[in-house]
Image 1 (cartoon, rainbow, N blue to C red):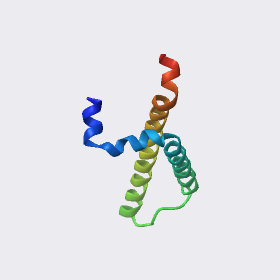
Image 2 (image 1 turned 120 degrees about the horizontal axis):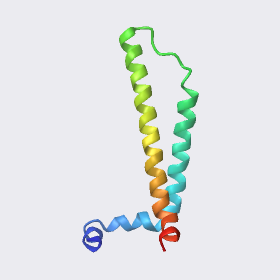
Image 3 (image 1 turned 120 degrees about the vertical axis):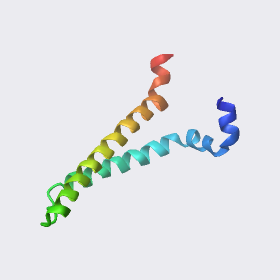
Image 4 (image 1 turned 30 degrees about the vertical axis):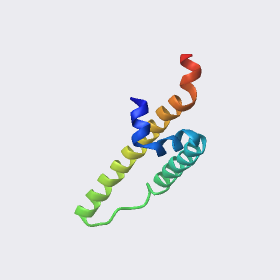
Length: 88
């Protein structure tokens, strides 16, 4: 239950008390992540074939992680701020 969860982790209420600040800071960090990803897309990978393949794979993985974190952010934003007005 929620009461049991809060009794095990009492500092979890910190998130609900400061959710606006947490969402603003995390939104800025995600925007910065997209900015640096776009900025670094034209940087060439090493000429060594193994390192070049690894570089390209890591670029794809970092795009996937960034998009995944954006999806989690949007879902969290919806349930933290918008769901109460949509469902009630």
